[in-house]
Image: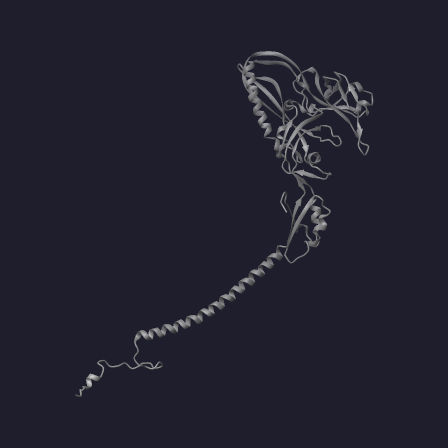
Length: 437
């Protein structure tokens, strides 16, 4: 039996959608689609702007680079000059030995001078009365012999006449060495120190540094060729009344006053040390002089003290050469310096020397312990002159004339120059000590 179909039975219930061609654009498209197209268009525009910005940034970077390079070249040209770093020869020997030095200059020996500083002070103490006191001034003189090459012997109490006819006598016999001559034939007098005392009591004999003749040689050639000089004041002369003071109180006051004066002198060393000389803390010596007391009031007296500080001074250059010769193997002379003298500890061989008048001693014996840095010297000014307008490659040859320099390095500005400047002021010497290769 045949089945009958209705038309609605064979047609779909929903209308079919027709596919639209790709290039077809509907007349009425939704708003979101239009917005998306506009966004795509803006994105395309932004990408094109980024390329332009990158190109612009590259040009700016190149300009800055060229400016910096050009500025550097100009600055280098304006700051032209040369720096030469010099490494001088140096050694650090271990020093631990007994040394000696003489007050009188002699060949091949270390010599010294004496710097003397003094200070006076006073303090009030209780006095119980007064007493008559008579004392003679005392001091030290240096006796010179230009009369003969043989030693000159002087007996005890040999007289020496100072200013105003004041007479002093030597306490002990003295033997004055004969004179010598230097390479040019000039006379170097023999000299010895001697302690003297005033012929009479009284304060008028407390004179300052003076020159003395020997009255016993009057009318003889020796009168002008045998003489003496004092380098410090004569002290202790007095003739009058002095206060009676309790010994314990006197000793306590004296010690306190002396310590104050001693410290004040120590503070003066560095300011009054002559240029070119060095001192060691352990070389300082002190002597003390009690001056006559004076009235201060009812049952009070003023005690006065003088402290004399004497220090041996060593010339820096000769001391450095002496230490180098004694402690550096193979040292063959040449100017050297010690960079830091505090690296050396100084002490007298005889401990009591620090409390004595070293001006009376012909020489000193002392121990030196430490590890000083000894540096060879060179003429910086001459080195600069030798470098003027020289090729940089000539530096090793120029240094051949400076055995004190182990090596050197040079930097010349601007970097393209191969010669040192023609102006001394444009060459700077920088010294480096102890640097490794």
